[in-house]
Length: 460
Image (cartoon, rainbow, N blue to C red; front, side):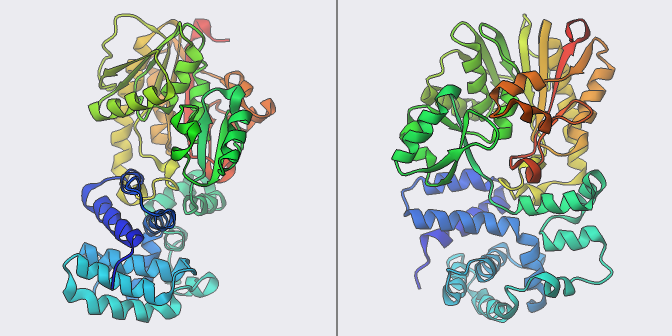
């Protein structure tokens, strides 16, 4: 039996995600550029991200039908079982025989033919309760399981991560977050000329793209179907893939015409382009990254967008920055755990360990301290992450300020408001501590944190 292109791609991507610590979105993009049919591309994406999101629950439902723990199975066998059960549970449009038979063929293709019979038998036994849900599913969970354990199984997240979120957000908001993490992330683009967003959206509709205005920003559009990367607007540099919260971070920098700006952790480049637009032809953005291949990727984005006032520099923001003059604005969009992006990058939930947060904190603190030293006397420093964790957010800012008493956190509501569809919406993103935050189930975006810092004598 032939294996469909969609299942082959999903299996290969899942295997590489597990074996190489690669990111599914990047691997899928490379695979789907090969010109496969639209339906196959859609199914491959659904299968890959769906299996990654629901991995724990799938294993929980498979385990009663196995003679040994899931984690003791060969990787290829376990992936075939997960793919098969995911289709049986979540994809009504896929015939049962196709889900099972092609999973068996995937095992054979991976040279694990000795497990083919077991895969076939397990999936057939699991079919009867594949769609179990609600109270019936909860009955399968041990009755004495703690709340974090129960929610971790039901919503397929690690127990330790659920427990810390309950401590931070409470059980109700955490449940909403878990649900949001298991929904497909919105496909949003920034319109690089904000005032042209209506015209660009109209042009996309004429080209048969299903688009709507962004939820929050005047300069954003959301896609419900189609591949924006193939649109004339994208190819002409009019739009750029970027979540609305990420766009907001660039606006919070409050870049002004003719300023010199440092974007010290610039990849993948979306914020860099928005900053360069704000700085104008007489301004300049220095965009840095530690990885040369990521700088090359930014260069391609700059060329496509027609952005010429950016200089790319290889640098490690954890070390003192190699510049002799200060910057009017410094952005540290720090590498982080990414817990605000689990809908978009579901594999992160399975890779992250509690100790990673303390290690990230140390690196982020070094970056922020170096950024403070790189700003000129009237400059501002913006610190941002796509994390929900306090160790990477407010703890970093507060620790940095302990050793830099001349700096303080300031409100950035006025910088964001002009870019919103309704300026009054700005209040929805700032909490009592003055920091900017987005929360996926409440804002419909990735989860971001941002602090804007200025020297005390220049603060309002």
